[in-house]
Image (cartoon, rainbow, N blue to C red; front, side, top):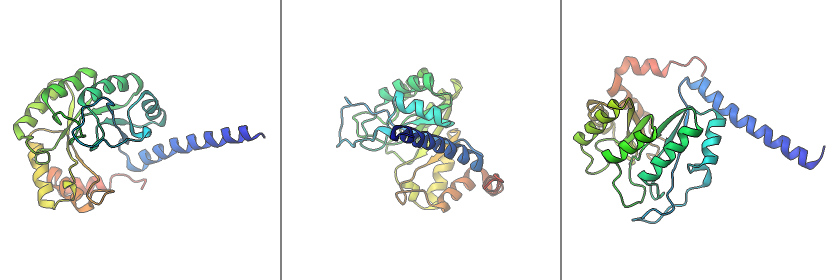
Length: 236
């Protein structure tokens, strides 16, 4: 066997291993497994120092095809701090994702991404929906300064009329705040009609504290459904 053939076999084995990891997670969790990609706009007007996003985390034809090949259930098009992601670029990548990816497409920003524009607006939500987004991502009320309950209610009503879902997100390091705060956020955003609640990973830099996930779940659906969900998969 030549060196070239050996390298090819190794690459094939790695690809197969990557695919199996996603399938294994889906079997163990019994829930959809997805991935974040960032639609970076290289021409964005920045109001802070730009953070370079590695190619594998950016939204592109290459990465979206890879997301499809690996069998993910959804892709989330969003922007981390300083990434240079714009709402216009998110909209363009929603269209691209809908042409290359068979799963659900989530679109929106949960906080600023270093660019000189509003984090969320009804106009940007409308552009995401027109592009084909299945789920609209917005900041949770109580996280981004100035984003009010009535604005969220307006966005939720608009998205639901377009047959889309809305996910409110805690991504401003407040996922590490106390359980009382988390419960307050959960109820306020549920009153506004959101369908999904997200919590970020900035609390310890790697994940949300378990007790806050538990508090969020109890506030949203009560202890019985929380325990049921925790015990649902028989494969773990």
